[in-house]
Structure formats: C-alpha cells, structure tokens
Amino acid sequence: MKKIGSKLIKTPLGRMATLLGVLFLGSGFVLNFTHQYTMPGPVSDAMLNGDSLEGYSSHAMFEQECNHCHAPIHCVTAEKCQDCHMEIAQQRSEAVGLHGLLPGTERCQSCHVEHQGRDAVISEVAFANIDHASFTDFSLAKHDTDYAGAPLTCESCHTQGRFGTDTVDCVSCHAANDDTWMTEHSELYGNGCLECHDGQDKTTDFDHELVFALNGAHETTDCADCHANHTFAGTSNECADCHESEARHNEIFGTDCVRCHSEEAWSPAQLTQHTFILDHGDKGKLECQSCHTDTYYEQSCAECHAVDEMVANHNAANAAEIADCATCHPTGEAGEAERLGYALPGQE
Image 1: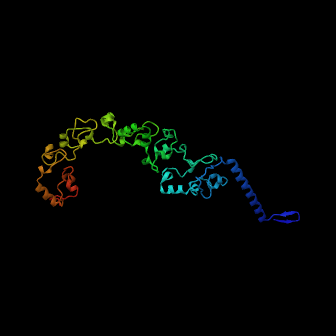
Image 2: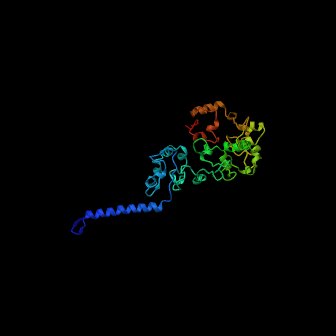
Image 3: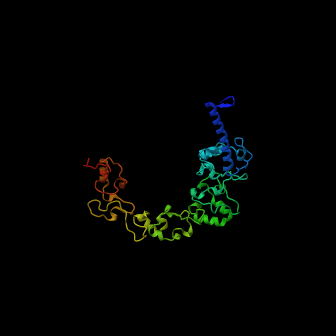
C-alpha cells in the first residue's frame, strides 16, 4: 500500500495485510465472546493435596486456557487429562487400580464433572455418576450409605485396593452390624453373596440351572428336600448323595444312577442305557448274568471267550491290550474291531 498525496494505492501485499489484521481481531473477538457466553460455569479451585501438576495446583489456574482440557471436535479427551494425570494413564495401560479395571474410563467427564463451581471437588468419584448396575449387575441403590449413615466409597466394599467381584467383602460390613445373623446366614447360604443378591431386591432370580437343572420331579421338589436345614452352601449334586439307597444296591448296581433312573421318578427303575448289544454272539438275547457275574457295573468277557483264544486273536491283530475289552469293543457288534482299525485273523 503506497500513499501518493492524499490518495492510498492498494497493492496485493497491502490487501493481504489488511485481511490478516481483520481476521486476527475478529478471531479474538469470537474467542472472547464464545468464552464469555458459552462457558458453563467456573471450574474447580480444589487443591491437589498441596502438590502441583505441570505447574498447576488446581484447574482454576488455567480456566482461561480451554485447550488444556478441550480438543477440537472431540472436546474432553482422556489424552488431554492424562497429559497431567499420568498416574491415571499408567493405571489404564497396566489394567490396575480403579481406572484400569472399570469400563468407560476413557470418558473422564462421566465421573469427574467440571464447571460445577470453585468449591466442587471433582477428584472424588460421585456414585451418582457411575451406572454401577449396568456393568456389574449390582445396584448401589441401597448401598449409598453404611449402617451409621456415612457415605460409602468404592473402598468400602472393595477392600483389597483393587476392583472386581473377587475383591468385594460383603461379610465384614454386615457382620459388624449383626455378627450373629451374618454367621448364621453364611453357614446356611455360603459367602457367595452376589450369586443371590443384586443390591436392589432381597434376592435375585437365582438361576438354578447353573448348579443343577430342575427337570422332571425335581421341578416341584421342595428346596428343603435337597437343602436340609436350609443349608445351601456345599450341597452335592450327585444323585446318590440325595437319594440314599442300601449299601447292597450300590455294591451291585453302582452309582451311575441315570442308567436306570429318570428325573421323572426314582421308581420304577428300568435299564435305559446299555451300549453293548444284548444279542451279542450266536446265542440270542443274553441274560444279564452272562456278562455281569458279580456286579452290574462290571462285566467279564472271559465267561464266554476263552482267554487263550482272545490272546491269540489280539496278537494276530497286533493288539496286545486285552484287559479292558469295552475300550475297543464298546458295542460288541460284528466287524467293530475292523472298523476301529484292527485286522482279525482271516481278514488281513
């Protein structure tokens, strides 16, 4: 831009300088206007336990420098926060501590809400900002205060300095309030509190399928029939432990109950599982005692098959093991050994 007399002559360089000046002044005005009229409120002036991070002891010290916390488009990001709070970054990278084990910690503002005024202490995790029920299936609706009315913190239940269902200590807290009741409750139901309690109702809809399917007659069986004295912890799911029988029965038939008994009724009993065919050989349908000479859960092939003959046949088929016949001959059907890869005499 050149001045000749009283006239201004505009040059390309002069026009560019003028435009940049306008943009600079305009952007400053926009930023000031935006900051003045869109900032939701003062940020916290809470001190960091007397320490400082990157030269700051509170968020209020850089309230005018929004880019410390805010990034374009994405606004608040974990990376921005972790530039100062490096111990949080370490927890998340190593999957330890509160920030390393809880989901969603990449959104810092979900729990640490800023612009709530100078007196707000946003470093304290507010239960109201954590949807505990959605990611743990345990609601804090009835666990916001202890028996004395004092606010509960994460460490009130997670007493081992880390977080997860395996670190929850329900017993200590409830025993401190009523030790007699808690002792009795633990003896009856065990200490797996979260299996039955969800923090909202007295008990959850316990899924019995997880431990024992209640089918057939078991569906209408009273709880006390299996859980004597209402003792639930350590209850066996073995049939023989609930359906007591004479020792002689077990000695003869064994304890593989489902072979003869169904869930519809314990009696009458009928053999329903018999893998080995009953018309084995050329003698028609065999009597039980033909193979089961002592008990019904053991069998003896030597009653019909001479040992010397079995040894010779197995040696010819390069099969030296003849002690456990059912391993290679589970059904006793003709040609079974051949199908399993063993060649019999005359079939090489």
